Image 1 (cartoon, rainbow, N blue to C red):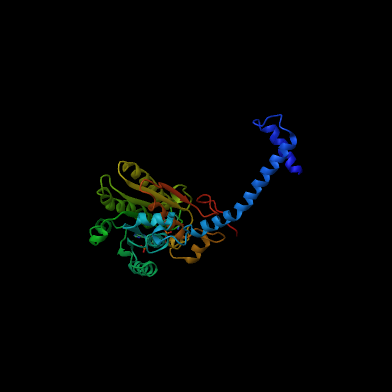
Image 2 (image 1 turned 60 degrees about the vertical axis):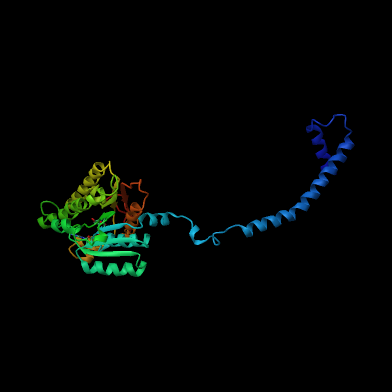
Length: 344
Ligand SMILES: NC(=O)c1ccc[n+]([C@@H]2O[C@H](COP(=O)([O-])OP(=O)(O)OC[C@H]3O[C@@H](n4cnc5c(N)ncnc54)[C@H](OP(=O)(O)O)[C@@H]3O)[C@@H](O)[C@H]2O)c1
């Protein structure tokens, strides 16, 4: 009753339409009846509302009842679709980042992809082909090709020697590269200087020049991706790495110039610069001395080649108008070429 009274008095003050001469007991009575009616109908409607909610929940289309053709679009599925039907060349695919990149492309677009994997060790490439086939099946056609990128003649003949169905290349991953030694000037072996420049710089430029005409002949304004694997060493030269750093700085300059030269085309020029990655890289640097190589990674957790492969495939799998022009990738303990936090 107290509640009714309060309600009625409130109403009396608020309801301008009600004549002020209305007796107070009549107001109490009217409001009390109105309130009781309202509560009665509200209680009656509640079970009906509950029934309605249950019916809506049961009959709504859920994730599980969607037909397969209505699968949700994810970033990964969109990337796989964009790469479908493409032909990808990876240099230096017998080990490390190159090998992981080939596998990552196959995993990302397993239905319809052509992969040309190249390096000097053909038998390792044949094993890679089997590995990919075992994992993703026949949707990815893998062509292993023996190719020394430091040999200009081999590079010149590369496209001409490809089977017809592999000639329409869409993506070139210039990954082949190496470092030799930690010598400082004036003690750097002439042979090491030549191997590093011929592979990392001349090889990369020759491969690009061999494949660019295919990209430029495509469509009205050309299309294709040049993805160059540079290094933090190309941005920050360090003692004991002068030649390697110089080669990667050259890769950086060539890549930046190329992107500008091709601006009127739809060719994408992309550079990916890894920091420290554990591969055969350091074993090659120390001329096969595995112990010396292992020391480089002691007390820290370097990147894996898969970490870089994911970025390469991500760059190639962007929408056609998106150019991931430049990427620097460190493991968590690294902040510069020579700034690393080691636990030991
Ligand atoms: N690991 C790192 O910390 C790191 C950091 C920054 C950048 N990078 C760059 O990443 C790229 C890949 O290196 P990685 O770390 O994966 O080293 P990796 O495991 O030693 O692999 C190097 C690959 O390059 C190939 N290669 C070397 N010389 C070649 C030549 N003349 N012709 C054709 N292929 C050749 C090798 O194959 P074959 O021996 O069978 O020919 C191998 O497949 C290189 O460009 C390297 O400079 C590496």
